[in-house]
Length: 341
Image (cartoon, rainbow, N blue to C red; front, side):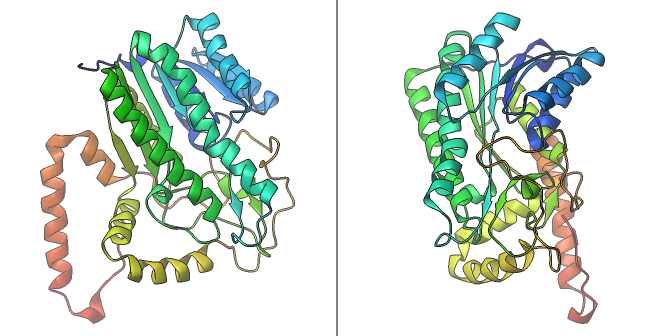
């Protein structure tokens, strides 16, 4: 069956974890482009403020206070979408939480809770969404991570949940293919993103946590999500640096184990800065309403993802990259510069 997705302006989009970071950015961009949005999160006050802002700008919005780890709450998200807008066309499972800790020191309660949100939240959201999407067609978009394909010390439990999300999403896609269901199932795998993840995560370390670089702006992920809402997409890594890290982990795993071990223990902390005294959002809603974290994003666009969205430019990008690489190789080692990409 050929899957046809509506233009964004004709869609109703459900977004979980919609009160900060990627979820908030995606919701605002979708509303600006004419989509009606149904926003779900645990923080009622933040939901109300965000929705009011969208409506003030002429957008259409509804909210649901929900914990995605609770199936009954997720059922209620779908019901509100049907009551307010007659259903939905795209469902984005974005809600996620984190814990900075070694696997040995992390408590069983915290380990279970991160799986309840990051994995079971995706399972609940996917199975609820499919009841609607299999009937009317549409897109199911699950937010994984480059950590779905590579290890991450100090974020081991988070990484395990994202591996699980990838396995679940890829298997579910095959089941929908078998049924010839009119549903596009997408896994989005962001690189490090400058969201409040570090502020929201529970932190066992003796210094403030941060997202290990390189870090992209959440708008880069939102663009990938909304592209997948209109164009059937299997999976998409967001950020050229992340694409390279995943490729390296697959190609030379023993070497990258050593490199990532060194770099993560160096970059997951903010040296000399004590842990934040704000509450985390592991077991209950934390402070919400912010798109960005406190470290400042390094990249506000990804040439890699732009090329993927515009296939006609891909050969040009490859050619330009080849010329740049040849130029670097031809220069003496003492003159090499550091490059961002």
